[in-house]
Length: 560
Image 1 (tube, rainbow, N blue to C red):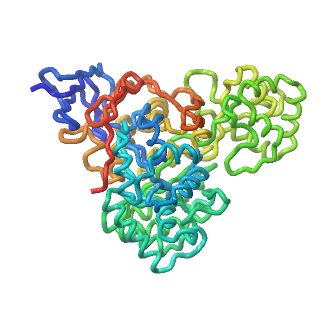
Image 2: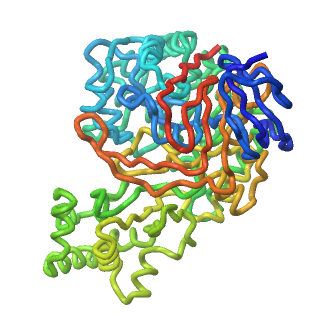
């Protein structure tokens, strides 16, 4: 029998946690048809030569809601083995949307997720009102990988309440209408509902996004209808009220919901330990509560080539007019400016006299000058320590390294999970899954979308914290279960053919690059990977030898 595609002589890691076996995988259409010794010739043959063959990875936290409109390849995650991605996180979605409300939703997405408003308005067709119609619309864009979507609280609240949604308490009638909209959205294919209670998510006018301060009863009523349909409740919690926030997640979980929330390690183990203890007790109760975290420190990328440097740090309002002037210049003008001793002195003095800016220096880490970025420096091996060793102020060191590298030097500003030892304790928790790279969002500031590659290269290969079967399970079948996907995440006959062939000895992230390929010339970071022999999505090879092919085989996967 001739199969459509045969992957030969691989080390098969099934995604369910079993020990690897050597063998072949046959694929017919979009489905795995045989595993083991496959006789006969495939119409296409892919020689694995002993490399690891594993399911495609599942990314539980992205914001590709907009980018899919102009980049159906969904880079950069498609360079990192991701074959299924969850959109609609953090409550910010583009549906439901009444006629005339697109401007509000696009503006909200811009301020919350740093996706340019003009790109959103011009790059999407905006030919929908309901969430189901939005899924229909993006299905017509033929994405390269699979899309799973949630309906967002911000959009639902604004759809029902209009301007009142931003600051007013919902009435019983409002809640009933929102519940009906969410229920229909899930029936139309959303896998669940997302909300944000995080106090750094703002509208363009500075007010918090709709739903941030919603009363618990509003979320409980919505959770009832989502739970009745076996759905998912995703939350970005208010980190200033951990105990009450986790209590609310527990109430939602008791209504037959799977729960997914964003978590980090904090600056020491106490923060992660507190969450782990409470979640552990709720899971012992049988509640399906799951966390997602970036498996390395997360934060901005700074450098003279990017325009991100002192004075631009999320959550800090630094008064640095001299550095701001530098930011308004082109790269060439910037590099010319710092050759002027007077300008250098003014820049350094401005930071010397700014306590907040000096404190930021302790969170800035040089990514190195090789092909592979260094995300694992000791937390004390920061810009401040580099400056001390050179008998300089950190701002002087930052400028000097920019000059010496021709502006190529890049630095990682750790905003969360700064302490890698504390992070290791968090990611060892069975209920914590890797992700939270925010792909599609904060594109001009953050480059964390290569988290899956880092999981394999650092936590499996370099550190041995996870075995290969366990690392792969956390990248595949574990997130598939959270999403309610029963036909993906495991290599077995009858399962969908989403597959990676990976050289685990060589796999790693490449250095972030700053490009200008978004609509209207907007800039973003991209980050490629090394070590992916092939990625297969729904039976089609979408990537060979680290390069995307022209195949766009993704599907919109709807809630069943």
